[in-house]
Every structure is written in C-alpha cells, then in structure tokens.
Image 1 (cartoon, rainbow, N blue to C red):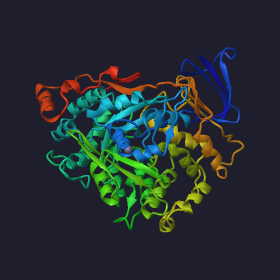
Image 2: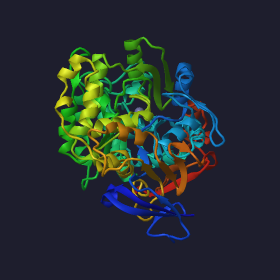
Image 3: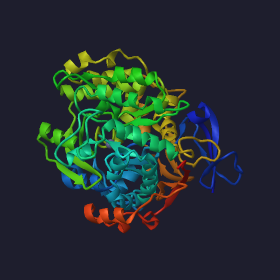
Image 4: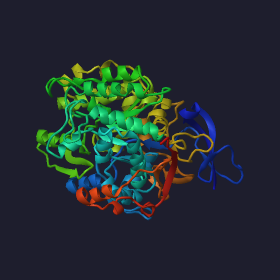
Length: 563
Ligand SMILES: [Zn+2]
C-alpha cells in the first residue's frame, strides 16, 4: 500500500528537518523517497504537525509486577474503563491499565514503540504473553541483570568475558533488549532484609560492590555491542541527599565512554536528584545533576516526571518499596525473585499541597529545562511511578510554556515554590526539541535505527497532531497543544492508518523487538550450572528460556558481539 502524507509541518530532528512543509511518502510499511501520486492514498495534513511515532524508553506495562499491581488495585479499575467497540476490546485501569487498553491509549497519543524496563528473567514468559496482548505498538523488555547471581559471581571472580557470554545468552533466552540494573547489590541484600547504602558497600555473600557491578556491566555492554547502554535505576533512589550517589555513579563510569558515545542511561532521574538531609529539608538537586550532564557526554537520562494524581508505584527496588510502605502506611506487596531480583508495589497519591511531592514535581521539570541538550534527557513519568503515561501531553505543555508552569506553580505547596528555581527558568522548548525528547532522542539512545525518524528506510510509524506551528503561540496557547498531543489526528503504524481523530480505526499487533546477540564463543553452561538451577531456582534450566513461538510477532535485531 502506498501513502502520501502531504503538506504537513514536518519535525524530523534526526534528519535535520525543523518544521518544513513537505510530503512524507510511505510504501510497504517503510518511509520511501516517493510514491506514485496517482495510485497512492493521499492524506492532506495541511496545518498539522508531522513527527515520527512516539517512543517511550521506560514504561511499566507488562509482566508479573504490573499484573500484581492490577490485582492490588481494583479501585484503579472502577474509576476508568474502556468500552468494547467493533474494533477494540474492553479494558480497565487508570494507572495500571490492562494490556489491550495500554496499546490503544499509547496509539491514540501517536506513540508507536514502547519499552518495558523491568523483566526478571524468571518471569520473561509471562511478560511476553502480556506484550503479545498489547496491540498497536512495537515493544521490548529489559531483563534485570544487576543482581542476577551469574553477574555477581562472574564479576567477583573477575571473569568478565564469561559474564559477557552469559549476558548474550540471557538476552536471547529472555528475548530481551537491554541490560537493566536496579539498585545494584541492594536487591540481593534485600533477600536478607538488608540494602546497600553507597557505591562501595559490600553485597552480602558475593564479595562485590555496587560500583563493581555497574562498571562491570557497562564493560559487558560494550563488549557485546548492545544498541542501548546499561539502563540504571541508581542506588539510594527516593532518599533525601541521593543526588550525590547519582553524581558519583555517573562519575564512576566516566572513563568507559568513548568517542562521545553514552555508556549509561540513568532512568527516572527525578527520583535520584534529591538534596537535603531528611524529608523536611528536602530540596532539588536537579541543578547539580544538570551541570554535570551539561559537561559530559557519556550519560543520558529520562525525567520520571511526577504528576499530581493518584497512581501506583512499582519497582524491582524491593527495599525502596518497603520504605515507601512504612512512610505511607498504604497497602503494599513485596516479592523476592529467587536468585535474580526483588519487587514491590505501593499505591501513591502525589498531592499539590504536599511539600515533598511539590519538590519532586519541580525536580523533573528542572532537569528537563536545565539540561541544555535535549538529546540527553527524555520525557517519561516512569509510568506509572510518577503518574500514568496518559499525562504526557500535560508534561509537554509544561515544557513548552512558562505560563503553563506558572499556572501549576500557583497551586503547589508554598514552601516548595519559594525554594524552587523553577519559577526563574525562562526556557520554553519548541516542537523540534519536543520531537527529540519524545521520539528522536529516545530512539537514538535505544539504538533503534529504524525508529524515531522519517528518513528513507525508516519504519513508517508516524504521528500527526492537529496544531499549526505557524499560527500557534505555544507559550500562550499551551492548552491547544496539550489537546492536540492527547488525541493524535492520525497515527500510522508500519504504514497502516490506525488512529484517526484520537480513535482507533484499525487494529494491528505490533512486534516484539529483541536482541539476537551473536558471540564467537558460546557461554559454557556446565552440568554444575544446570545442577545449580535445580538447587536454587524453581524453574529447571531447560524451562528457563523463552522459545520464539511465545512471541506473536517476533522481530529479532542481530547484534555481533566482540566476545
Ligand atoms: Zn521504572
């Protein structure tokens, strides 16, 4: 099928296109140079924005953890449900939507690729079953490897090459996309009710430190030539004063960057940019993080923006979630995933009048506005931790308009407002910068070469929004922009028109992207290791891998490793 998207204002930062009026041609699911204008379906999008489909680098949408969140929160479902239509299934959930609803809602906002950032290898099968049921978007998952016993053992014995082979094996076995590390060392310690407090603490029983885990896995990532960097949730997340740990973590891998290429992604950085000694003296450490990031090129971040709303927090950081439970007294659930990781879930309501929540709200925006280069920081809420992903248009409004920020600042906690530098920041992002922070930059950081742009050969994943950049003063008319990004005028997935005027008009599956890592020497999986599986895992070695038939639409990306 041929499609010609005519006359829109195209924002395609990867190819240096900044709002030029031009056509985009599509054939067989890909962007092409030109199509036969008489045969092609022509879509006149005069006066509208044209961007590549949105990319979300970090959103908890599938797997055991998310599903437990759904079970824990029936009240989240009562508030918000989707009716069945001729094309779409019914569904429920505001902060933890069911699988189909997740796909529809992303698609309605013009998103076409989303990354599920937290998959215990043991629960990979469940994760992929849910991803199969998440339509409209391409998706991928990051296996949690920071506290995986193989990581701890091979690193403490100094056998980094064998670890690299094992990581290649697990990436294939779980059909995973990137190395995820959460509170390195802390999750293993949590198995004994403990935690680690600094980069140089000892992890119980393994004779290794968080610093060695982070550095070791960054080296493995480079040895394997993985397209994304290590994706890190820092130690001490969610604790006052933690910006120092975050700075130290970034510094600890400074020497591993090469040719200006990032080696680490600090995810939902807002939660790791707290200054102060306790909750009363909590302040923003965003300026210090931004200052460091502005002067270095080996790191990328995403925001983890807080939204004032009722939501659900969920992370593999079991000890953090226990702390949050103690702080709030809310219902909670916690889990130790055998030899791999932990997890916890606590419902949470961010309130405007709460000092701490207000400070958190300012931190996310300060990070996004103080970091000069939009290729280094991406828009997320760490869905659903900072708020549901459906709040993205609201964040866009805050980023493009000082007036929008002022309107919210007026309503937040007065002490937080008086201590924040946010009111003094004048920067207002333009559509080019928004396109970078919501798709181009995310795709580039993920190493997804066919995503995030509209160049010839790219996947024809396209979002069209009803806002005319020539006639819109985004600073003043931020509400119109917010509305436009909430309901895409058209979403195109792999060349198919799937959304029109914010409604689903066609159902597509989307594929599951994973890394087929090719190593010159395979991991040496001995009988001893198989025996270990019998001893310490509830799943036998033979049942551990996810076979490809689990994936409804499999899209392997070949990677040639150096080991
Ligand atoms: Zn997360």
